[in-house]
Length: 130
Image (tube, rainbow, N blue to C red; front, side, top):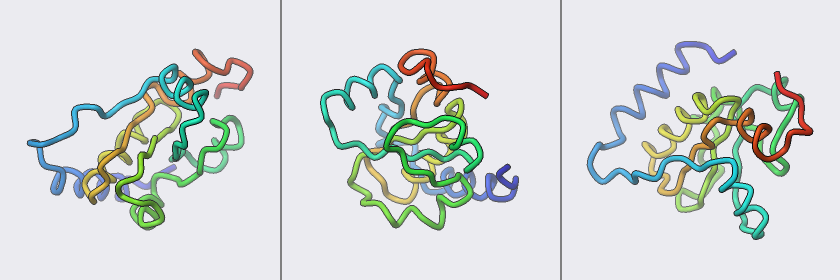
């Protein structure tokens, strides 16, 4: 579980530094769209912001686990001009992570709409849900 103070810090930082004007209106990607892009061989970086125990249950192949609470410490591992797909169970935590990354200068960040649950429903029903 992510401590509330960490979640508040991420949200506060995103609100303070993410300007309303000039915002890229494209903030989400659907499971089917992501699957098509992966099938085309596009090199996408998918960051799973769930906890390690959740990641053990199910995951999108090739995704990188960085729990939400670690995002503020680890975002420098990625190029701010690189396209990142943020992902969690339902899309809420990854949405917060995406907002944070945009607030610190990342230009191409998309949130997986509906998270891994939508991915399982529409792309890979062989994976278990929790």
